[in-house]
Length: 493
Image (cartoon, rainbow, N blue to C red):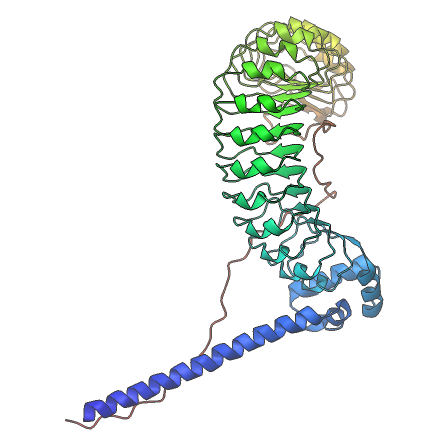
């Protein structure tokens, strides 16, 4: 009997603890739900008037929006922002976007390069047609499902694995999902209006869902785990496809893609390249790191303007003499000694010949349009032929056998001249300012002097900017429960 009484008392205390826990949890839930309802109904003016009481993250967003509106007055800011159809908030260190939820007239919103992880406030912006969220910390994209008017969506460089919410966005024409954690792309099959699709650097192996996207003109699939490309046979409207860095050995399924003008197949274990000869419309071909050796089949590609053939064990480049439309040519990391065939390529502006066995560079003297030239890691002694290349902006001559650099005095447009690993004495720069001459191996390489016009332009960067910091660890708010009532002492047995 004493044991039963004690057990009942213990059970009673447990019930009290459970009751208190339930009250605490339900109170917390009611508080969260209430806050969400209040947030959802707020205008920008409401957020603005409460600025002093907001979290630092929310307050920062309000201040950014006030600056965008060109006022410090809450009501004036609300009137201006509420009427906007376009808003660019790139590079603003924004993490909390709740104050944007009431801007329902927006059709074009750009939030690239911020610190955003929670995009629930965007669910109310159903008029959006163009949304850019690249370079943030987003993993959950369910709030995008109601945005069925979207035509252009950019989600590159986030942490997205599940893309099922995109299946409802059937008006999409342009979709960027680069640099995420996507493996399953079945949800893309209904998006039959897509024209441009970018899925570079994900975890994709099965591309069968892409077979239905017959309107595609640009498709980017580099840096995945793709081996079977048969599903691409139906995509006959494609003009540009990037398949670099995959596991593709058979490229025959590409035979039907007769409209291709740009093709990237670098770093794949391709067995047979005969098919490449049939792509006579190509203006750009990337075929590096395939260890092919023999490139005679490329002679028919006379429309080429850009050709990348790095690291292919190439020694004979005679066929290149006929490719007179070339503007960009990359032949680094090969076994080339004779570059006479290059003398006819007078439209070249970009040439990479690093890491070969080149000694005589006289054929380069005619390439007077060059502004980017890499010749490092060769066997060059005499650089007098370079004196005529007066449009050069960047010149790489490291690790050769050069003793005299006076012939370079005529290259007055040079911004960078790399000379480490030679026998130059004294180390006197023939150019002004002398800092143009880099005598030591560079810690970093400069950006190329230009972007080729056929390549998509990256987002323009401000003069100085800070990339988003990695997200802080998630800390859960503890729920403190009252201690259970003290149990009475049991009488001695």
